Image (cartoon, rainbow, N blue to C red; front, side, top):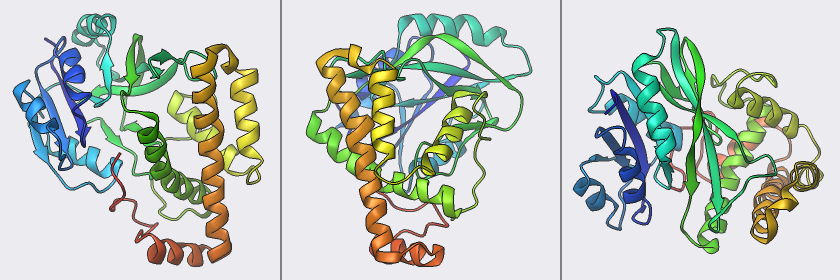
Length: 310
């Protein structure tokens, strides 16, 4: 076993949680779950597998995850790791972690891992979806989650990061209706994140935008550029770029569904919701803040508040 603890957020993850935990048991038995009051048997499954479970009302992803960091019962481990319940680690990554972490240089504070996205049981290899590098492992006390509405990343407080060669697999087993409902909920958070780039509602510290930096820095840089493209034009550009220029069409029929829904439908829905905000509140910052406060019960200057769970 590695001197490593893992934090997982859950809400009704009975389809996934056993697969996730069993994969992690290749490297550690210190698994901490922050559950937002699941109504299925997620908690029972996790506890039977030896995980420590606490329940905490959902606020936002960043708040929930930072709560997990602050309240972990495994604060004495040298390393921490972030996992989603519908993910699992490959045996190759498990072996690499066991071989690498005990010998990590002192200046190394974190490790980026490749995420392999599976959709309808198909590996989405193209369209820019592989490899996606995410900082998932960090030295205890060196990482926190950005307080953003969407696309939150782990931010290191010091040191350097390195990369693992092998993958985390993101393989959600729910149906397409669940997927579209989830992304409809995501869309309002994406709206706030894009508007925040323009209006700077909360003035929160994030990773430094840098096209030539880490995956998180590059993503933030490109998102800022994307936010400045015209409404309804950018989803078309984004889809064509992913599907044609990044060869998404080679992912076949299931790939077409994925790239169209994730790369166009979802982006278009976000723009439609932004258009709706502008119709109701105009482009004045204070009016937009008030609109979200009255329409959605959200204070844009305080991202850590109640939003739909995943």
